[in-house]
Image 1 (tube, helix red, strand yellow):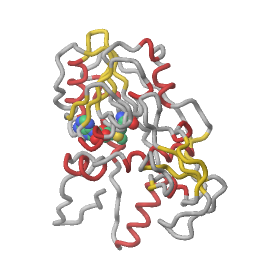
Image 2 (cartoon, helix red, strand yellow):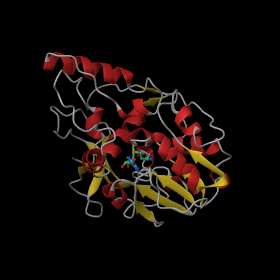
Image 3 (cartoon, rainbow, N blue to C red):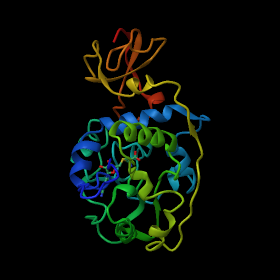
Length: 291
Ligand SMILES: C[S@@+](CC[C@H](N)C(=O)[O-])C[C@H]1O[C@@H](n2cnc3c(N)ncnc32)[C@H](O)[C@@H]1O
């Protein structure tokens, strides 16, 4: 987040690409990413999981060449939708990679930067770089690296957001912070660095053909309180799973931020490679409890 710098202001490192910021704050652990992923429960109209949609574009999961290398794998949303395949997870953040084993991912895990992949040339059948190229300082270089590690017939899947993604939220933030700070503020959002509209050109430097496919949904968040549900909270009665995901089950909104609402259902975070982090697919750990 960088305010519009005034004369003489040093904006400091860009948090959208700064290694220290990304590996300690944005992606120090999987919690914040998991929170953001939960928000997509509110996408309308309801569609198939994004993993299913993505793999169908190239003939389904069985059509993906192996090994499948996921660069910026995060909490393994895409890899866990490919059980039984030869998969490699790579990420800049050790904290993110740490979460993969407990989630059941047994393949190789490599802490690395997309701009310098520790993989041999022409060694992968499929590469993925989903929702992550906008964090890479040199996107063209990352594209060249992804092309280098792919076999000549290999395919790169790179999911990103459109230019208007969360635009309304961005406007509200900009206006609110500008008002509070008494000077113009613009939140430089990571996604603006590699959008659906402009993502073709940096990838075309390395790839002979780049196809763009759109998946249009609208996020309709009815209130501010669903954000509370998006965060993992300790579940008081869960002995087997220390982190549980409360979600509404006829409960009422908390009276103030951070306060537990009454009457909710705790569901455990995905534990096996076959689970995906989508909240609708998590298993129930304790039934209905008072959180
Ligand atoms: C928004 S998450 C996406 C995770 C996953 N690909 C998904 O779509 O669910 C971005 C991930 O990219 C990783 N990342 C950021 N910069 C990177 C870089 N230069 N090289 C490799 N990984 C990076 C972050 O640590 C984080 O796990």
